[in-house]
Image (cartoon, rainbow, N blue to C red; front, side):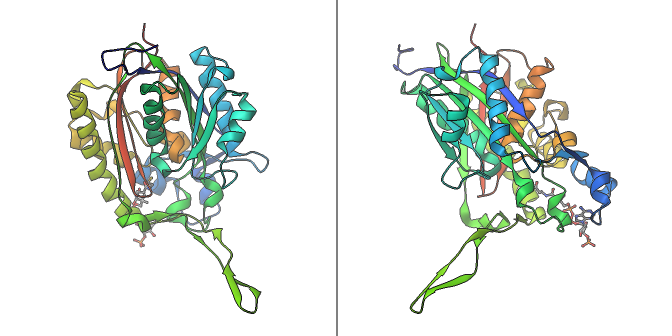
Length: 337
Ligand code: COA
């Protein structure tokens, strides 16, 4: 089936889901183990508590639950899916976790792959899936974003460990007679990759007298918070303005800006730079902290479940993070009537 003069398909977003671990770690509980306080964390970031994976729980478990909820909302069964993209920086297996996710889900017709773009992973994965649908090579896709960054923390480094939590979100994309994705702008710049990373490194191991190799493992997350903050408050408004310009939409006509949830002060600063009221920037930071790629679909799910985002309403989805990577998508929520 082909739609429109160009022969290309449109895309619609028809289901959303989220999953977070049950265990909740509050700022006050943190203050009992490291030199910090609820007052410092909350005033600097807007975070009150975060969810942490239990010992016997995995990122894959969260991804599966979020995917099942998104499919149920879309009214689809797993066999309807033709593609699954898992945006994650913390896969259960470095070779990829998406195919295992698709199999556990029962998405027997889908091909699946991981995509890594740190906290911008959801936006990049959504944009990628949309292109497959637009060209007609795929009719129904599932975009899942899941991260377990608490497993990659130095829990003695108070400037990073208080900022992150674990979680997953998922969105179903389908062919549509009307394209609900109206504009996008994606960016990356490796010059400042060192500002925020989980580096691979390790000791030299002598295999033979004439052969020494390096045996890598991942180091805890390392971040220059001030520089990342400066990057976010300039790069994010810029990319949002460009995506809106492509869609020929005035920033003031959008009531929902779903930004990556890293810091309340970043959300407020982006709102100010765009000249848009702060209330247009949904925040779930207080309860979940920074869940990396998962934060945008988690926040979308909460707004949709509470009836705060209605079908066909305009929204901007914008991510930013390590790489450095950043990007924005302008779209409408829901199935085309
Ligand atoms: N509790 C108490 N004190 C803390 C602390 C904590 N958890 N973490 C750092 N501090 C201290 C620092 O040691 C420093 O003390 P000093 O002045 O005696 O050296 C002081 O607080 C100020 O530190 P600073 O780093 O300047 O704070 P800040 O106002 O820049 O806030 C961040 C730090 C991390 C909250 C802020 O830079 C930020 O949010 N950056 C963006 C990070 C981000 O979003 N990353 C993810 C992007 S995807």
